[in-house]
Structure formats: C-alpha cells, structure tokens
Image 1 (cartoon, each protein chain N blue to C red):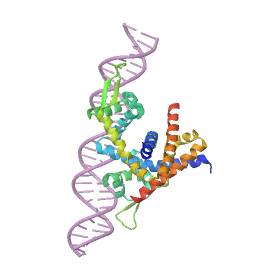
Image 2: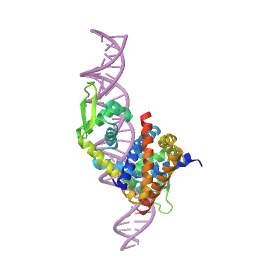
Image 3: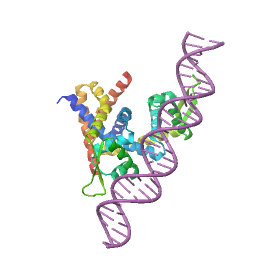
Image 4: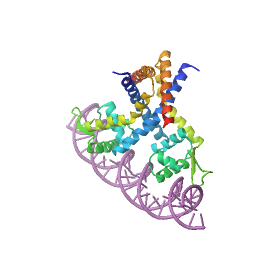
Length: 149
Length: 149
DNA sequence: TCATATAGTTCAGTCCGCTTAACTAAAAAG
DNA sequence: CTTTTTAGTTAAGCGGACTGAACTATATGA
C-alpha cells in the first residue's frame, strides 16, 4: 500500500470520528439558542468570511435572494446581525455580525469543541507534540488550497 | 504557553477549516439527492451505528417517536431503508440500510472527502508520514473515549 | 438620456419537519 | 389474568424555509 493511500485512510478515519461528535454538538447548540440551522449557518459564514451582502449569502447557501433576505431579517430582528447600507453601492446592504452574534458563534464553537479538551487529556506530551506538528501542516495546506481557488 | 494549550489551538484551527468544507459538501450532496438533511442524517447514523428501532432514532436525534416514524416512512418509501419486524420483540421494528441506502452514503462520503485527496497531493511524502502518525493517535484516543462513555 | 441590469424586499403559497393526542398491538409486572 | 408499560403508527395542525412573481431603487451602458 502506498503512502498516499495510507494517508487518505487515516484522514478519513479521523474525519468520520470527528464529524460525528461535532455535528451533534453543533445542531444541539443551535437548537438550544432557538435558532434554526440555516440561521445559525449564516452567522457562522459571516464569522468566517466576513461582511457581505444579501446576494452573496444567497449564493453561498444556494438559496434564492428572497429566502436570504427573509433569513437575514430574522437575524437582524433578533439582534445577531447588523444590516447597513453599502456606501459604495446604495442598492446593496452590508451584513456584519453584531457583538451579540460574535458572542453566540464563540459560545457555539466552545460547545462543539469541548470534547477535544477531554481528548487532549488522554494524550501524552510527546503525542501532543506530534499531533500539533501534523495539524499545522494540514491547516497550512488547506489554507493554500483556499487561497488558490 | 503550555504544550496542552498549543495542542488545543492547533486542533481547533484544523477543525474549523475542515468543518467548513465538509459541511458544505454534505448539505450540497443531500440536496442533490432530493433528501432533506434530517433524512440524510438518519441514513448516516444507521450506516455508522448499525440497525436499530424507531425509538432509538427518536432518541439519537432528540425528536418525538412520531417524527422519527414519519421520517423513516419516507426513507422506506424511497427505498433507502428496510423496515422489518424485530423477531425478539414483535412491537419493535428493525431498521437497516438497503443496498441503495448504503450506496448513497458511500457516494456522499466520497463527495465530502474529495477535497482531502487534493490536500493530500499538496504534501510531501515526509509530511504525509507525520500526519498519518498523528491522525492515528487522535483516532485511537477518540475511540477510547467513546468506549468509556 | 433612455434602456437594461442588479440588489434587495414583500407577498402568496407550498412543502416539510415537528409536536401533541388518540390509537393498536405486544411485552412485562403485579 | 389483569394492569401497566413500551414500540410504533396515524392524523391534525403549527411554524419555518423556500420559491416565483411583482415591485422599488440604484447602477451601468448604449
């Protein structure tokens, strides 16, 4: 078996284990806040990719502009999002996470990743070192791929 | 900064990058099959955890037994699930993925993890070795945690 | 300047997931 | 053997996400 195939297998095995835990924590948290998954997803997107307009939300989630507008409206009403006029194009809106929105995303991240702290405690210092090195390699490679796209 | 904190940060940075990609691929694939996310999630659960009854689905997803029954009904109608009587308890049903269901899950997994193959190609052989070792450490630790729970 | 394209909103209507409540059937408990 | 608990189904109804269509307002281009 070649190294590359071995690599792929290890990566997938880990992803499977991770996905399971993370997904459950994620939807559970969204539910506990009273937000729907689509609503929560929009907050996450905004957190990761920064401000954008309605049309970009519509593209990112592959929904109509009408749907995006309606979802955003609810998030604005709930105080998680600020919707301002884009100074460079008065038709467009600039959506940004409010402080309340940022806090929510932060909280959700904590919730979702809490089990990783438990996992950390199961590893020896030496194991942790190896893992850190490897994850940094992966993260960097992922970023390179994103940039090139 | 202690090693443990460093570890946690690396893990989270990687998870963030990973979650983004994986989630999008996942919901995109579910949509393309005509299945809703809840429906697709049930197939995934069944694939990972094996056969179970309605009540277990209801517990796993934190929904009422009625909701579980209705979702399962649709999946049975669509041919993704087999619903048989449990021989050891004639009240209960045994839900199992059909061949069609297995194939779908397989396909979805491929779809979701395709980008990882691209990622693989960005790494040197030496880097891949390091990553494999680290991921195996993590996967094993995660399994240990699952077992103890 | 007039025509067309783009950003977003609003509305009516559909579909889906979910819940509660009422029900059937089988198992467990007394 | 009767009572109670458990597994699942069905039906009515609510609420949210989504779409297409009609509309306003701004930008772009001939």
